[in-house]
Length: 145
Image 1: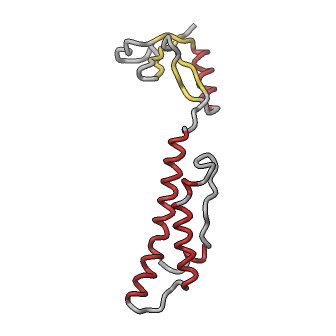
Image 2 (image 1 turned 180 degrees about the horizontal axis):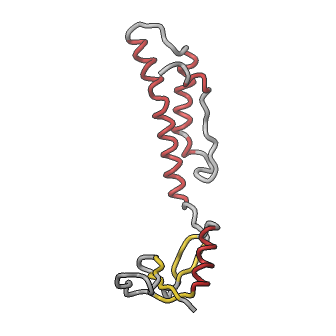
Image 3 (image 1 turned 90 degrees about the horizontal axis):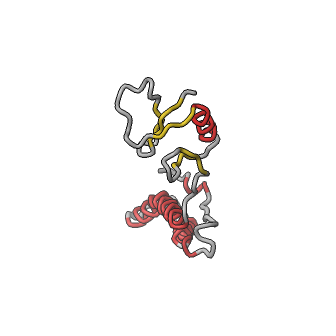
């Protein structure tokens, strides 16, 4: 039976018969049947892992933990604020130059409320597991850049 070498340190499979270099010192031998099974499991979304003896196995992928979810949500929140900052700055510039404003006073307040709602996202009771993301009417963003 043909065997392949697996190295836990490189998490790579090697064919000892054709690999032209020295194999890593921590290799273990597995059957081509086990290799085919592992590849099938990997193609189904499982991830490669190693057991305590250095043999390859697959496991279910681990999702982000609570801290990672919170960090991702804060990054989304910060991006949302940055995406509308130009509206606020343009409105302030138009006022300071005594020009007619692109946004109405009501629209300007809507943008500020949206930014505040984004800032309040981490205060939601179910944060970061379930988040009710605030929305801004799309027509406000289409007022010209």
